[in-house]
Length: 213
Image 1: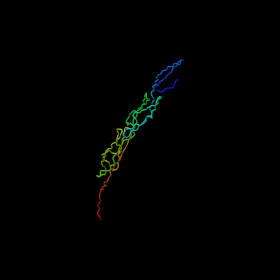
Image 2: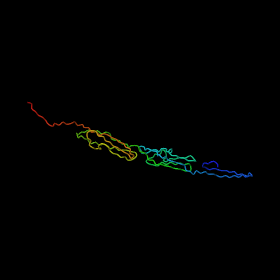
Image 3: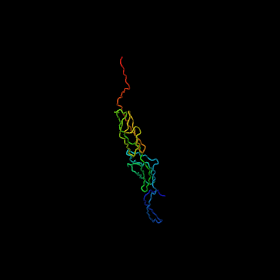
Image 4: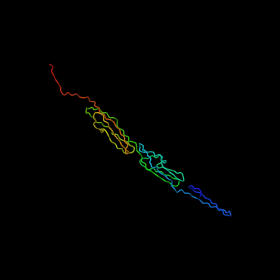
């Protein structure tokens, strides 16, 4: 048995000689075909891709995570989406290995992980003077607007009176909270202070009159 031949085209030449030393030659072509597709395995532990504040990410090169093998030739492994592609949301990552003749593919799903809390900015502290000795003052402020790059945000006031309420003398803390769809939360707060600037009044309840002896 001769040596093992790699895939390709080969020319075989035979020479035959009889007892009278007469010779004859024959030539034929041998074609060795690679009919076995390459082996390709995607990772069992899926990688994690974190979203930016705009809810996008740049696709990394994950070709090193797959295992590719072929007995006949060097493999070319291609990733889709390509490294450097800007991705968002949920998508499928597909790898294709080719040995020049056959191809094998494997894939896995990826969903960007949002770990960035919404942006929430409260107004500055509010200070009011109780000018009319009412022991309370109405206080208004603009309601904060939460911003999140990945979509809808649940927003609520968790402490304090609502805007436009009558605030009594003293200091109250107003707290707002925003939560995105991934459960990331952010809070902001400010104070409302009503100052009592009216002096107390003295009221005589009775009077006493007397005559000197």
